Image (cartoon, rainbow, N blue to C red; front, side, top):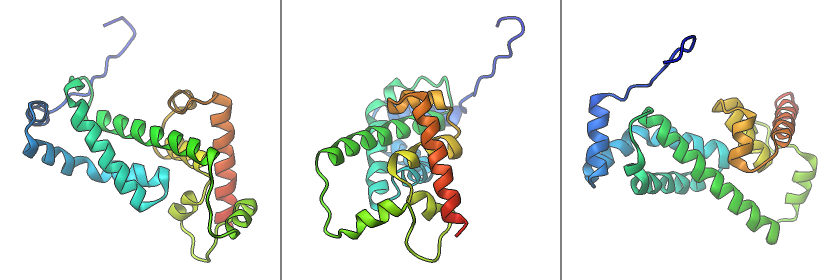
Amino acid sequence: MKEGFLEIRVAISEAELGLVHRVQKGDRWAFEQLYRQHVGRVYALCLRICADSTHAEELTQDVFVRVWETIRSFRGESALSSWIHQVAVNVVLVDFRSQRRREARVRVVDDLSVYDQEESSGLPGARLDLESAIAGLPPQARAIFVLHDVEGYRHEEISELMGLAVGTSKAQLHRARMLLKEVLEK
């Protein structure tokens, strides 16, 4: 340890490490236990970013498929929950980018009033709470808001994860906050 620096290590418990080792050896029962312990937090993250419960459920399943596929790379140098959280963020952002590319190519709508709602930047309905207000944000602004203000990521981390300039991350966060303020003050 260098002088003047405090080393902080998150120790993984022996029980959790044992569970991870069993999962790494292909033990499906152990994986089910791991899944049950972490599914709530993963689903909450997915729901906050994608703002659609059905899609959040699909992403949650994708996250745990990815965890199963990559658990051998977990070395116990961080908390398991932190590692799973990072896997979840990566899965959600990959989905976000691919969805954004699809929407850039083709946009199909049955109801033309969608365009009116987008232009007004408002949210329909009289009963609004913070979660529904966040869900109504434009996708990129919502993702950045959730990652920064809810999950605690720095702009530099967000820009790297999402492939954006730091300034774009800051601008989108400001936009998200202004839209939320506008909606919540109604």
